[in-house]
Length: 614
Image (cartoon, rainbow, N blue to C red; front, side, top):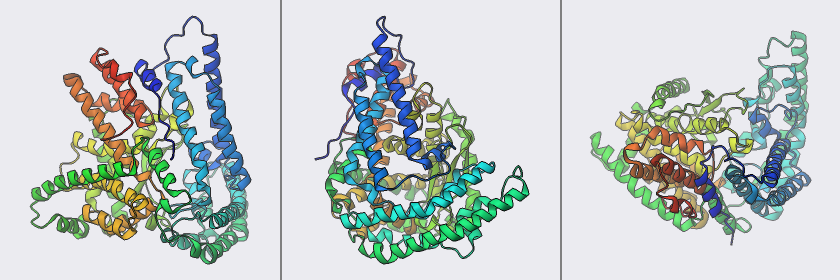
């Protein structure tokens, strides 16, 4: 049985003494040992932050750190073993620091880091590195890194050329891991891998300048002399033609003839080595709870029934006379709900984002400083990925956050989903969550960029409902879109647990989704395949939303006229990304502070409820 390590009573006590983001209390007179412990802890955090960037150069690039922009992550088995050993060593080092000597704020930092690190160590035994790619990304989409690189001066181009020269080694290391996965019976489902050949083939181009890896050289800054630009372009053409393209051609042959035919036919995580324990671990990891698969499945069924009843009300409001299934079909197929071209669809997404922006002050006092933009999802992955996603900005503020939208087949991208989607992925959803996190004062860097799925996705799903508070759902079809998106996340609880722990087939999961939500078949199939390829991750959204909504109801009930929605939302984001038990303790402390007393102090000193019932 997998051990699910949750935060202790001491975390709740620490949080009730100092809400997240608060300054540490004045030190006691005898502070020498406390100061030593604090210095050791923060030195440890700094060392681990550096190690994380050094070990994952791509992560450093996404964070806006240019120091490692000339290399890729070392995917050799030796390097993976070293990183795993370093994680185990880091956990031992952290445990050697006397937690009892730390301030309330540092105890929180300690516990959040320990929570993450313990799970990193625990999941090593499942050898996920033997499945190094999915239909949503991997070595076959490595060129997407150009989206976050600055390409502002000659050094940026020289670094990219070094990375291009490193592509063959990265591809070969990936192939070696996949071969080891074949031997161990640790492979992804074939139904997902059948999407990969086209992605690999997209890298094998006849003209190097048509390669996505060449795209940074198509437009270069004027600060680089023309002659030097020509030299860099010539180098790029040569490296892509002689090294990058041949490596992908070889990889494609290996994938199509050796790997794909031997991938597993089953879709359940339970069918992987030690698969049942693996799925139990993932469910706890992503939801940050101890909920079992059966409990999560039951919550999903209850939420599906509730949301269906709300959908029936909207159907009646718009005067549709048929069944709910017929209403879904109407929403999927009526041309009035679709734009005719990718360009029109993109302009509509931009317009919705600008419509949301001025309404944010209705539900927030604090607006993050970092801006965001809207971009299309790259064409080569658009057919195989989700409707939209968010890419955080650089930590140092040199790159904005971006809301990526899928323009593939606009005839299957309904207008009624666009408002809820934008509230979730852009503002006040993921952009607020990540941008506010980067602005947290006096916390270690890992807290500023941390991401617990239940908190992050729970917040973004909660943010969809803030559209009502902002007056953005005046159109009943937009309200139907919000319900459709809420249903989407409720259905996930049912189908994810269904496929990975209850023996559901892919077709059964697709049918259940189509029966209960108006999303188009293109989206539904992509979503189901995402749940197959990323077990447990989709459980976190609804579980996190239910917890935040529960906390809002509690605050409103206990504070009465003192309740201010803007302050509540600010307080949730002031926690940063944390496990749900930590968020609950933080908000209990905030409610007590707002009420002007400690009337619920007894509750705060109890262990937070680890069963997120919603």
